[in-house]
Length: 237
Image 1: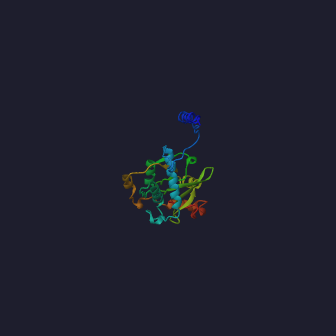
Image 2: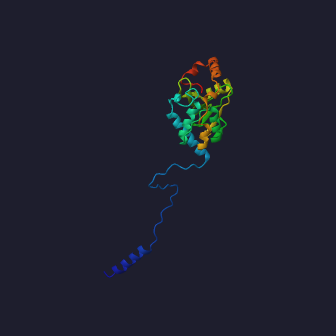
Image 3: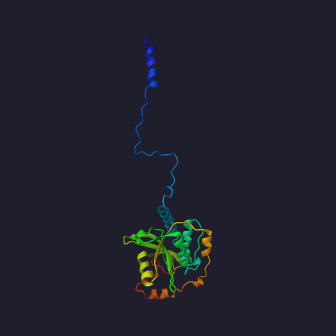
């Protein structure tokens, strides 16, 4: 009984002054917070562009079957109006460009030029501006279908006045570049536009558009013209 006092005293001193155990370092461990982390911020222009292209591509898929006859151009000259409408939805700002040459100018100011087809992403833009006598066309690059590389392309169909998956990149280049002698350019949209830019392009008389008669003559004489009249190939503009 007499030894209990000192034992209790030393027991208390031990717990008061003994060193606390140190936890091992958390190498390679990630601590979770209670709230969900949001998407990473845009760290570079490239990341932003790729994200916007993906958004354009998703809206493009949701726009398949869109009636282009109700758009400016009446379904015949509506390739620019259809593509600009999708771009406006992706940018969350209204965009209505009727004339193909105006859309080409807009792309040169608001998109990055893509030099090689191998660098294309779904949601990028392919455009063949009109010449003096031949109406061009514009479309949106879709999924990769071969390692050539080759891609599906979504655009307005002149035959049905619907927005469809109606070209491939290889056939686009063969037809517009080789047969119609038009240039082929690729763009990746990278920034929104100002309201002033919209006003510059919104109203253009369709009467000034180039004739598609030369297009029809070349299409009818083309050896693959029969395949281009269906919804898998589409027509201009």
